[in-house]
Image (tube, rainbow, N blue to C red):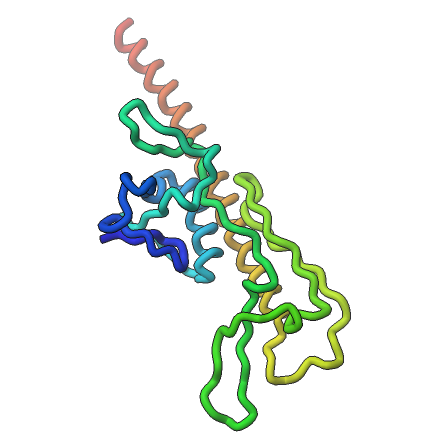
Length: 201
């Protein structure tokens, strides 16, 4: 019973089907495209080391209409360049860990209100096939009202940005390796053709 890989998405292949207007797509076999999908899903799930397997799927609700088409048999398919769509990160999406003064249990991952991120302006991430994912962060002076009870959101965002850049570099390296393999394949094919001609002569 594969479930959509996106965080909080409740679509499963056993309950939400084609008749409901939902289709499911497995991660691409091509390592470059698979890396792009993995990077985007990792960001959305907020997991650094998400690694898809053969049963992982992403439902059609997370793809733009322009990257999907319907086949002659009525099956919804993706264009080769399609990648999952990640909604913009808003201030409400930011989370922090609150440490109680009384030494009791720690409250984790409470959603911030706008007042929690006062004096911090966050720009949304941009998605690109060529550049991967980049999180742009702009901060002003730290508020004098900040308390030690809140983990520094800016620091967490910088860590998030570094992780995304690291994934972006990985995708670019995979692209380069793939390009080299393609060139080698072409050279080997040409050499094989020459050998066949010599044997025929």
